[in-house]
Length: 165
Image (tube, rainbow, N blue to C red; front, side, top):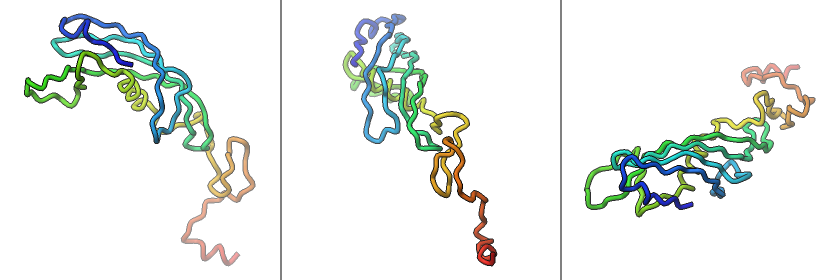
């Protein structure tokens, strides 16, 4: 979704409220899937020639558990705090890496929101906090019950002794 910034672009102190629902598409290689449109609310404020985006959102996602490899769904809350500046090729000034430069009078909100969702993903996606994972021997999902494998930890240094038994 393209967000028109013209109403606040040249008026310091002006605010542009944001209250949108975005239909985001997954990208190749994503380890999650959007289940429904993403809701974003907040505002963009013109502060001294720089636009400051401050917004919050929620996204319902389907992910795969890192322990048991089962799909699960959950909701991710994320924040967007971006500094935006209109591209000015004649100024010659160097722009800080913390500032997102845009051309024209609008920004592509989808890309910023996708980045916010991506950065808010957990480092380890778990279907539940007490997920038991998979058996290291047979691969059975231990959340469904125990397996019949001998799960004694083995030390390769004692393999020679195990052969004597």
